[in-house]
Length: 273
Image (cartoon, rainbow, N blue to C red; front, side, top):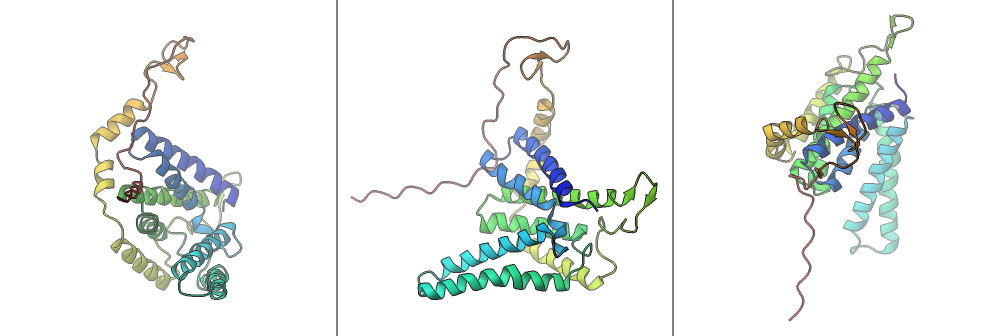
């Protein structure tokens, strides 16, 4: 299989290419694009969370521990003493970072259900849910993050399959076919559990109207086709057809605004009379 460096490098390239298309289509505010792109990079390493000593696994459970420990801290900040809050915060951090991490790996196997399209779908739905309900992003942004993560996840699975083919010795390794699969036939109960998780996650996903209308819009694809190549000069200097250098700049065709808005800023409090 491909190593961590290869996965994150290729995942970054794929996410960057998708981010370029998204920015050119002008469907999302630039401040949202960074978070969406990072979701794609995360997806490119996420399947390896079932590898106990892998960096993605340690990073994910550390992140969960930090997130939920501070969520608990802020939820009970006014109810308990400082000493009790320290115990709650540290206990939650240890529980998620080490307890949940250990339990997860006792129940999972590498290249099992997490190396499947079913797991990729669940992760995409879960990403949309987190972006919409936890981070408070627009529904279109939430689904776009889910799409980015799914494609990053798919990139990981495809890379693992490619690395299972030894081109030089013209042979296929025993691991071929264990990464890119719909579900894991070896562990039917794990596959059924993941299917249940997919259904449950989809039931609480944000509305799909914005993302569906956006992806089916003719104006979107027409605009991307129009901006695919420069109209006259590359980088405003080299003529597209003759290749001769010319002086001057082309008219400004920069991004103006995104049709999927950024989160609205809180209104300032009214001054007392």
